[in-house]
Length: 371
Image 1: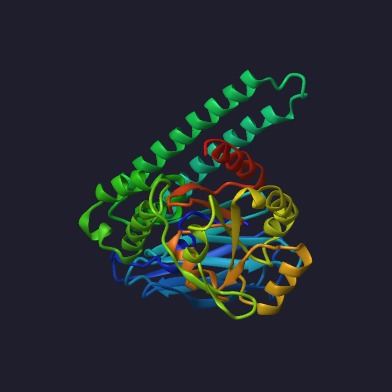
Image 2: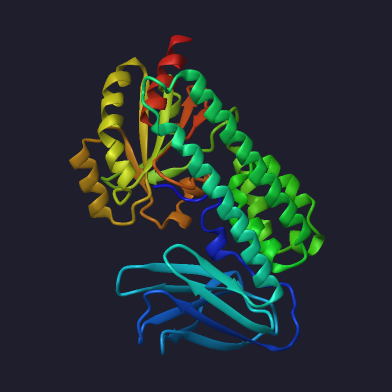
């Protein structure tokens, strides 16, 4: 179950810091499929937390609000229609008349300078997404035509497009570094950049932007990623087994040629789907000096234990039974999505990260062949 790399920052750490005029704004929206009486939830970021701001009721197929624009905040709207459609987006509370029109295909926000700019940038990013989708058509070729050189060309084009997207975002962030759009883009696209790239981008921002608590949190996460990069020594942490006994990573690493930290949860669909392959792999390599350690992000103890039994996860298991953002192991290793694996050597060096079952099998076999 994937999530963005600096998971939680966008929704928990955005902070309004840039001043606008002391004035009012109006926000009026129309979303296809809305019915009279539907609720639209407006949230805002205040004091480093995501909080409820207002609840709007649809009347005559539209919703509207008026608010103070004493400071220019980043707000969000959220609605789920009776027909199952789900809409969520962001806007900026600067003085003026802000409008939203949305359907299943597209949402358009505008009416004030920052909201117009945000829409222009969103349109450009949508264009990049369409180009990525068009590249995906390569995979629909008949197998006999999908030769290695075709796949290499697809990879080259994909990488070139990724670099184009990053260059575009760097330009927009730099040009808007002193307003909320630049801050928003920095936070919501941090996952596209390597830690070193993000570090350089942050260093180029104005001091007041660098001092924003959300940006400081990204910088702290980057430092944590660097500490736990491939080639660095692992960081130990403690959990509790299903029986309630303490278990540390260090209890196991030195006793095995290879140790695999397997981050998972019973509520994670991809984790459960991959469990049979992990069981098969464990049975294949355990006798060769390979140990797994399950690191569960479950909070429901019964569900955690049931999944272990149902899936036959025979390797050592541990959990703190805490929410994701409070799980010490996940924080130490900046785990932004599960399933997620970290491969450790007997000497305690991080050998690889983020390998799924098939990749993990190839890596373990290659590593053991060198010993």
